[in-house]
Image (cartoon, rainbow, N blue to C red; front, side, top):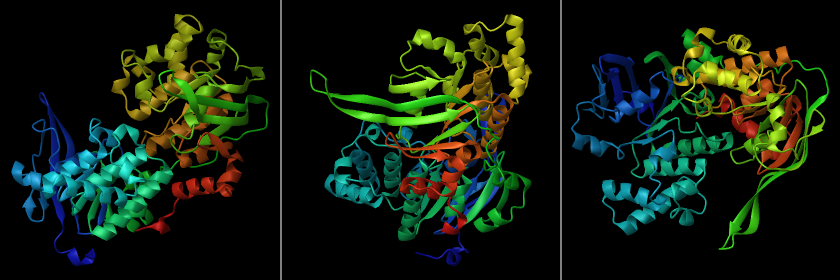
Length: 542
């Protein structure tokens, strides 16, 4: 592998004075403005910034994957090994795309063909670019799946994308990207949707492959922990401009630009809201949610998926219970069972009242007291309703006050969550992700509930917005003595909010108790693994 210093004279890829405009009718939107950077052989360069900063647009420009002619480049050049890619012919581009420069996309499901097996999709690339026959391509595909450490690769070759987990699909994407041993790998948010332990293994894999194959990586991410671990140099983007560019250590130890300083200080921190011991609000005893696995013509039950397997917990009024674990551990199912939105066995006590045997009609009055905020505000907010209608819907259902009182309540709650009440007649699509999440919190809050179940409420948000939402939740908890069940795989957020902690794995509790104690000295090896992956320090750098 070439050393980075050796190739400083001639960068592998050089972007100079690049701009990208998007044209819609008569309006021109500047997505990227006059940016310049280069990538050397064997180097990892990270583009960081929040959603909408122009990171992905820059990456897609390199391979000319933007929606042309709606997109255009009014100025700038992208030079790869002496060749300008912006003026390259379609035939010249095809030679570079997927062969010399490969890309891993954020969402593997949108990049994999659901109708073709994994083998067929990787074989296709090898046959197209390398001229291999079917037998040779299949042998190489098997090698690649072993390289990205997919378990039982022989069986997995025949699998379809939907039959794989998120982490496995991401590994397949990496295998496809590496099929032609590219010189440059563009990784666009490669670990966003993955659990921390899977993130860790994917990172180690990329790092290992980089060393073995001597390739360069352009990493696009808003996760600074991740960037710190793998990047040599960092470019910080904001509103389509690069505001700071420096070696990774310099960016983290001595950031110059106020925005970089803000980004680095945006990690959710601080202690949970003060709590004095009080009465128990929520209790579960041996709670189970088992989904039957049926087979044969008669659909006999042959086994069960034990999504939640015998969980007991107690939560006091004004406390936050953090529920953590990987995807598929049963966190969200536990939340749905507490909310009585799915059938469960075992006891659920709310304020001393057993609610597990109540019918939906009997549960309805409790819905006012027990509210929920979901992961994806866009999916849970009706696009046809204005913000005022969305927040006011619960008030109407529970017949709380007359029209004027309801209007006042909506205005008050919007102020409470930090939104301008004047915007209440607008629709969800007119707001950013963080604002939509505030609307979801306002919808839950307007009913003056006692318990709120928050299912991954910050996972889709930028760090600076996450921090604001965490501070908002903390403030509201203190003001109204709210009780939270906070479900998340983001341990930094959980640490900043939780009094109690419940660590789940495959439907079971592996560790539970005082959050501060567990974060300081986790007992179970799985909890230790989760915390090590989430709070890895910069010493484990490339």
